Length: 492
Figure 1 (cartoon, one colour):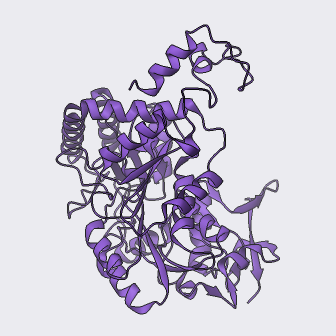
Figure 2 (figure 1 turned 90 degrees about the vertical axis):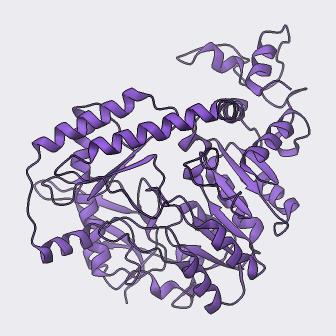
Figure 3 (figure 1 turned 180 degrees about the vertical axis):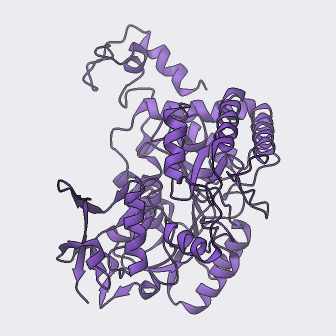
């Protein structure tokens, strides 16, 4: 069977006139290209229906399952968000109990809210000497499941936003020993499992539900993703029901064609693509190790995605955001994200040599111009502690482990009456809203969690560094710094 874009182009060249949606009728106008309009169709004869696939879309989804080692795969046109919502909703009964890593994407919390779930957390540890969260370990999962009752599913993130990869095979065995499924948000790992030198993907490691953002690390259009299901622990009919709920009833054929195109390209060229990818990444890292001020930590353990370049500015006289702005403004290099102490650049199989050469050259040049600042150990520790851009596991959220906050569940806390108060006056109160940096969209605070002085300082510092902080508001008054406000549900 031909690939989807080939069939779409053949159909657009035919004499068939569209007396159906979409309203542009395959005619070009404005700034978009004619090709975009000609391939944008609805569910017409011969092109199947994503919500009841029996033809070409069924074939393409089966091919995706075979590539990733899944029993069944589903195209997602509402991004990984739709996959996360569907996975959690199908794996955990309404009002049920889920064990979830605290660094999950906000879509996981949205699923818990919609299904009114009780949530217990797995707290990832920081990598020694770095302000970066590591992946969840098998020991953490085992200990949590021994202590908790009636957990219906476990959810982890692997790779993490900074590329840390969990031992999913070992975690799967622990979770399955309890007779429950493992969900892996592998949004940043759609390229895994295809070649030597890369970790296996979570389908190959025994996970039951795996979500991939095809657009994040493979050459597909934004908003494209996959949801894979393996084993017998997931009710497939229930999963399909939630996919129909959370996905558009008018799925884009451009997006579905983009998924097919990306997977076909990878399958056809995988040996060359991944060999070059690995070679280019290693050569870049070797050259960057000569930098004296900027640091490029090579995290050991064999569980780091080589496509994620972490650039540490610790010990220099600039912040991660300032480095981000310099690379963008002077060198025209747009990074994935900036935190206070580091930046993150992403590389994929679609980056040519120029991408690596430009980044390497720019960073070496910047490094030569940086003034090295020696920081007292005590002051340095305090600075690093303040600048961590995600949660402090011991102090922020332990109160929330049971899923209850002052008699309120997480979803009840989000719906509670609220008031706006000055951020630094909110110490001791409980958040009424999610607060997170974007990217990556991992909550610093979840509704119901208590604000400590440390967390309030972290939020204030992030805002003052120019990072995008969602969940707080600010009022700018002439002649003074903006005042930050946060929504709270009580004044304890």
